[in-house]
Length: 131
Length: 239
Image (cartoon, each protein chain N blue to C red):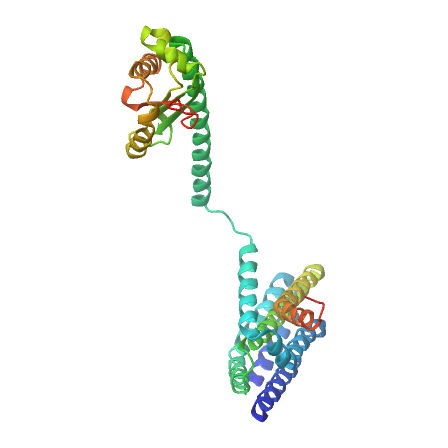
């Protein structure tokens, strides 16, 4: 029943933040940030089970491990970028948050470069005059 | 055939499942388009597998290799803060370069002045002088390790050689003489070269002595470090 713990923690943190914000906005922000961090770390351990299942699936079906690695990296990048950008957005720095998201997008695309190059080579190889 | 088809279909299904999974896992809409692009590419690649294999053999190894090199390249591109050791290393390298350049310049100048000196005091025509400087531990050139003097051959040599006995004049007329001063380190090569040429055109002792004398007086070069040669072995005074 981790969900109850997490929701409880979130509610308590929210109330505290609302109370503290009047006096010290700085501490309100810190509280929010650390609550988010805690929930993130708390739940990231659970994701291991999911990843194990995914790995088994990949193993059994015989898809190259490189695909799974790429996909997992993409998920990781997406989550971390999202997490960071939301904390920054909470602090009111909208522009920095959007830069973080931008970096996340770029890194995801970078992961696709080897795959794209293999596909392009194949397509070029298909064309009789291509080579 | 059927097993191959089954494996292929299995792969496609697995990849599509994976793609659906990450679509669910994604945190927000903004990333979704990008992730879908990559997932779509992976699915495409899986579907194309038989064709790729037909055309290019095993592409998985190549894909692995490409990813590897890409990741490594990315790591190399990352900004690397130089440490103090790196900076000191660079400083040492630059110092060494500078010193070797300075040594080369010194060698050149010494060779020029030796050439002039020999020409002036013995009247011999000197084709080239090579000076080799030795480096001390600090990397600075501090001693002469070898001098190679190459004397230009004389056209009139044949006639003059008859007159050669006469004296200084004769000495001047001597066929081009190469004075090679070899450094101690290379006695073998020097010896070999000298022996090869020796029968044909070893410069007369008088010439060698004269050149060595000049160099010893003017630049305090030990005579054993001085090698004297005649230029144009092929042109051959012997012929």
